Length: 129
Image 1 (cartoon, rainbow, N blue to C red):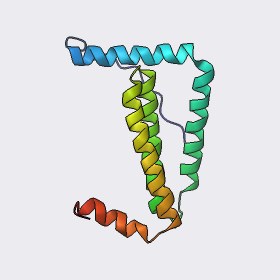
Image 2 (tube, rainbow, N blue to C red):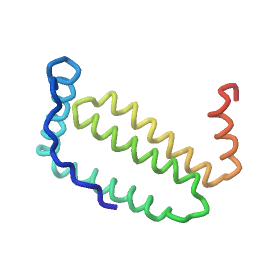
Image 3 (cartoon, rainbow, N blue to C red):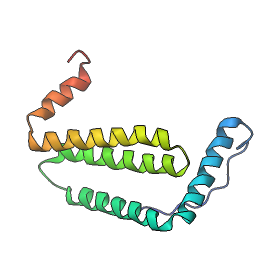
Image 4 (cartoon, rainbow, N blue to C red):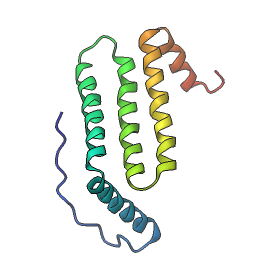
């Protein structure tokens, strides 16, 4: 699955006139620097992303669709964690990676034990469970 290439939009008005957007811009620049300085390591991340996308593409029209939702969530969390780490927010990236691992395990167990899907759905609907 090919993603659209961003058009390189100019920053919106008032961008970097406050500490929050200045921080966003700084982390974006850190991502660029990490990409340039660690191209070999970054190639591994690209391969992991390719494998995620391949697994997701294989899930089309499967009868076991519910566990694949966790694959999507795991992939999204993985990409978010990579962006955080590349932007010099390693500790925060670890927290997001923990969420990726958690989603992967939920998906695995629900695939292996389909009866757990209902238990999972009930647990997120009712916090008392």
